[in-house]
Amino acid sequence: MFDRLSDRFDDIFRQLRGQGRITERNIDESLREIRRSLLEADVNFNVARSFIQRVKEQALGQQVAKSLTAGQQLVKIVHDELIVLLGGNSAPIRLADHPPTVIMMVGLQGGGKTTMAAKLARQFKEQGRPALLVAADIYRPAAIDQLQTLGTQIDVPVFSTPPGTDPVDICSQGLAQGRATNRSVVIVDTAGRLSIDEQMMEELARVKEAITPHEILFTADSMIGQDAVETAKRFHDLLAFSGVVLTKMDSDARGGAALSIREVTGEPIKFIGTGEKVEDIEAFHPDRMASRILGMGDVLSLVERAEAVIERDKAAQMEERLRKASFTFEDFLDQLQAVKKMGPLDQLIGMIPGAGKAMKGMQVDDNAFGQVEAIISSMTLEERRRPQVLNGSRRKRIARGSGTTIQDVNRLVKQFQQMQKMMKQMSRNKTGKMGKKFRMPFPG
Picture 1 (cartoon, rainbow, N blue to C red):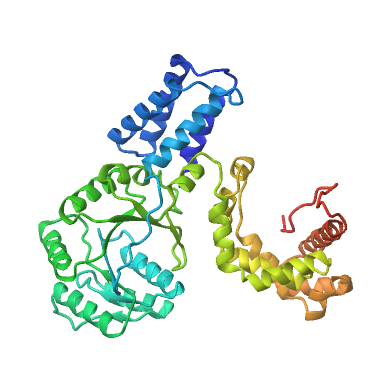
Picture 2: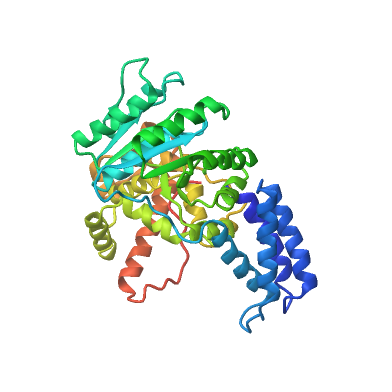
């Protein structure tokens, strides 16, 4: 989402790198460009102005450290102020002392509120906190069906009532059901509208009074931009919501809403949606997001994604196989499928420090995974475990079975053999240093 903003920041800081110290003149020029970049990214005007003022005060009030150039110093100041702008510290869900924890989802129609409710329910379930979803959106066609479908998909029960039931009664009955069935969390999916209206807001206020939620989460579509900021402010004025969840953070939107809502409402961003699947959700960490925006990567989030899809026992077994240089196509296929579960390649690359800039302009094709999988899946068990038996006729059969060419198969086998050599070298070299460079074993 922040690619364009990251590129602009990178250009601005590059211009400062050759200068030995920060002066009022060069800082004014740089901040003017930063302000323009923020406004182009749809950051609220007042938020951008306040941010620039804080950065300027910090920059002019500091002496540049001997180990830093003017550009490096400004990057550090902007990074620190971005963290403040985004909330400072991460803000987890406040759990009730006596379950269930009641979470009320609010927002406009089409913002991804229902899907986000299911994502949260799935996350709580994986943490050992069984959830109940309450279908209280009786106005949007198929809203209840959508929530029930999602509930079935994640194996979380959904409470609903016959048509014509008042939404306040639905929420009250749903909460009672959650208590009766010993649910740790009750997530209420309230109705949204295409725009804010008094009737909707009054209904939400009545629901809040009836169920006294521990958290009210405002769901904002990251693609709306300035409108999302104004909408969030109006919702906060009436409901005093306790947190924000941002959806569609995997889109190519400008991202200004994410940088503005926290400042305008004073409430923390708690979660972000990173895709359409129910597992595509991340806790929001201001420091990590600031690093992503400035192109510094996000190694911690990358590690967390890996830990979520790779079992510790399997990882230990894989490490042992790598050390013994007995890595096979079967092992490689397992690792490939684990990486696919971590998310789109462009997202993963963006989390690796420096990788995003190094691969700027290159096409990152997730379909390359599919081709590799098809080739390996067309091999027999013996061929996967003993690649050395892959003669010409076998490769021809594999190409035919996978819908690829013999050249594709040959390329993968060659790259795999290179990787096996690398593994042997690493197992022999205790320091793990490599004397040669090897390409990643992906086709292309």
